Length: 238
Image 1: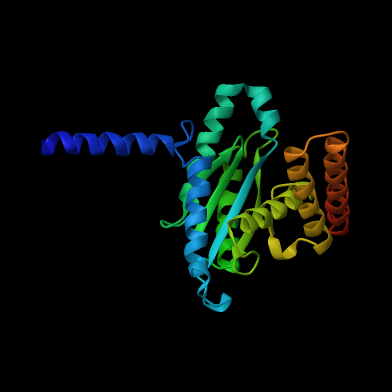
Image 2 (image 1 turned 120 degrees about the horizontal axis):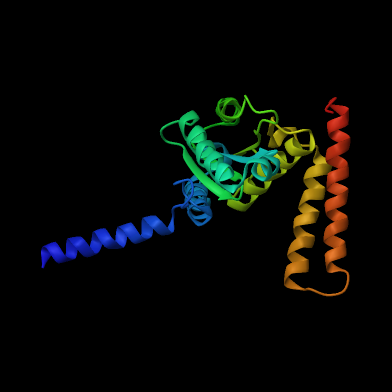
């Protein structure tokens, strides 16, 4: 009886592990990311009993490959899949032992950094950026990575806010030319506000579809892109 129970427990664990694992990269998948980050953010908040200054820090890197589509189209899907697997390994190797790597979806990844402040998160992000750049450095059009960095409690107060802050920083990095790291603190206030408006419009369009809803979301997206491009030009990006 004991051996049967043990085998059942092991089988149950294996099923759960597969459900949380991205089949291509072997990293945690999107569902595992959302759950893990939520648990860490809840622990950071101390269920509302801690002062902001006493909160445990949690940093998040949102990462998106640059020029991956061209690489995939040029060399084929098997080569693209192999590169995604290699990128996952490069991120894992550049991170610390306690950090958690996930495939967010497509050519996007997420790296969760428990007990890491914004300064240290940026240092880890640079290690990741360099490691990924080396993978295709010999190619005519190398694939690089853009990274958005955000931290609780400095840039957000909960999981959704942390993801939004890191994602907006990532968006600015892509708009600025890619292959760079942008911290949430460096995102212009006007862009943060417009990005928030875009998210609100997108949710409204999703839950209350009707005439003009898609157009409103497209218009907000175009405004955010314009702000990002203007900021990139002001920084001297091509």
